Image (cartoon, rainbow, N blue to C red):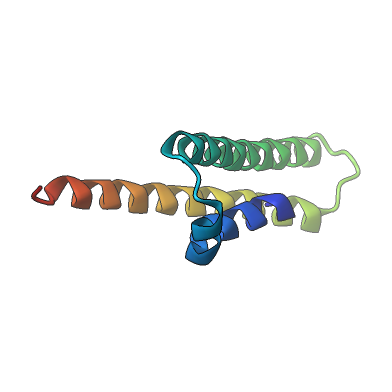
Length: 101
């Protein structure tokens, strides 16, 4: 996860900063869509890096086992976090749908 993603996430989570910017719903939708696509792309990139390192180790190339394990754990944690965020978003959506208007 790069620093740009972290700062974008913090800006989404900081309500005082949102009040200053006051983006339109279309702008907010586009911003969230871009942030989400970037986050998913980073998770996929991490998974691919892990596969490449594992394949290099399996072929007997000069690869440090520690680096392979760290890359695999990093990919696993990123995927688990993504799944948990997805679950929370679905749960929040279902809660909104249950609200009476």
